[in-house]
Length: 608
Ligand SMILES: Nc1ncnc2c1ncn2[C@@H]1O[C@H](COP(=O)(O)OP(=O)(O)OP(=O)(O)O)[C@@H](O)[C@H]1O
Ligand SMILES: [Mg+2]
Image (cartoon, rainbow, N blue to C red; front, side, top):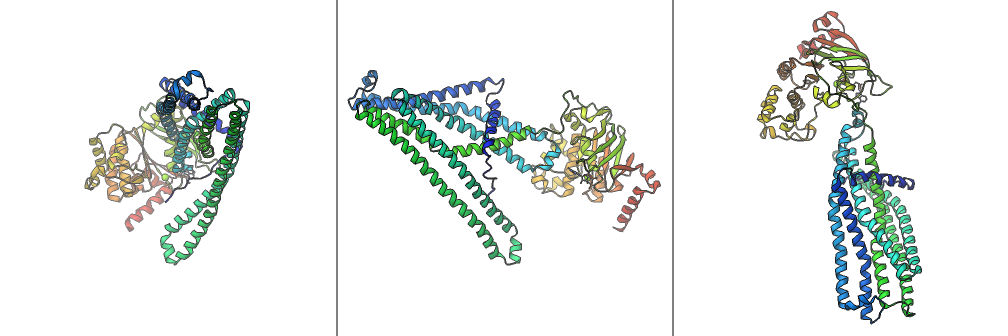
């Protein structure tokens, strides 16, 4: 199915000035500090550009001299006429070739600059997106983000190509030709050409702006028809159940009819644009040629001059034909680039302090001091949480769904900053240390493990950068997934599918445990790490998890209380505060919330 872009997102005229700002933001990538080879290439490419244009503008002189020599006139410089018509014609050919040669050289020299700039820009944006906060990522669609980058980079590429290789050269050429017309002929030729081009550009821009609206309408109709078609095909079964094929076809046809009307308007307006452009250019061409013809008749000009004027006019008009398209595309490119640079300027919510030191883990004590936090100000999730997990100790957090258990983990990892209070690891506030060192110190097995669309082996090895295959197997064994992986036809090379969808929930969870085992961090956070497993596998893994927990600080979040009864301390989190705390036995003796949850789960197990 065709993926439609949001066609016709073209800015209003006032936004066009921001277009210059956008262009300015590309310049550092084309003229980067400390990368002299780039600057050298840019300069050489610009020299090539100038050379090719000087030659292009000089070529009609040779043509004129050849014609004058053939017509036996002496309108050209004597040294030129001395070469003779044949020699001049050959020189004309050589000049044309040189013109194109320098153009191509310019492209070759510039290609590396352009490609490097695009790569730097894409990389910078990619890195920046990773720096952006969790909050930002959750609210934006990832597909949308990558589309912004993709379109932005394409926009930059387009702009470079057209500004440097199309509009820029055209402007230079027009400038040179205008000067020649003025110097060689007289000011009226210049006036005629400038007037024609001025009107032509005005006409093209105006009509193009009008057409942009028409095209937007066409794109909208197209999207509409497409959505109807996709929706209908997705609901294939429903359509059959209700025998609604004819109804669906009618709905689709109606949408297509709208598209037809809009597409026709687009075609008609294009015809209008093309004819209008041709009319203006031909008018200008004829006026200038008539002026030249009269000059030849009155003996002021030679036949060669007449031919030269014609050659210049043709040289000007050819590239002008594309002006409408180029104008429209450049505006679109500016919008796309603006979006990308907007993304680049989006500040990261969580950043390292300038003087942030690396976290120094001495034992792994985790302390929550009067923590208040909410994702939104109106809705606090944690309301004054006070907790200490001693170095090497274990803490279990239980509580109803939505109480904020996973939120505690996100705060530890500093996906978000607390609103009030402090979260300290070995006495260091997590806001004062580098995120890198903090992330290195904490291993997380999340509630729902998401895998990369690669092999099982790759996903386990992800836990540590330099893990060997033997390490991977060892971790897989500890996570009780090795036997399963070995039983697969392709073993560790099995592809897990997008987000790991080809694995069952329990298998995914064990891969997640294996890669955290491989990471081997001093602080471990298990968020319902074994919730998707059957009781037997769970108790097997539980053994390796508690083995792994030796000498580490472990925070376990669990629904199934049997998995946390061994913890040094258990807290019940309810309504954003700790409602009960103590060891398993203490909490049972309390006969409170924990005790009733325990009884309920025991009853379930016995009933099951
Ligand atoms: N990114 C977010 N933006 C806004 N609200 C959120 C966000 N993430 C979680 N919440 C809300 O915060 C509350 C606590 O979420 P949290 O994930 O910590 O719950 P939990 O205790 O882990 O629950 P469960 O046992 O179901 O996993 C929930 O009510 C949830 O709706
Ligand atoms: Mg949770």
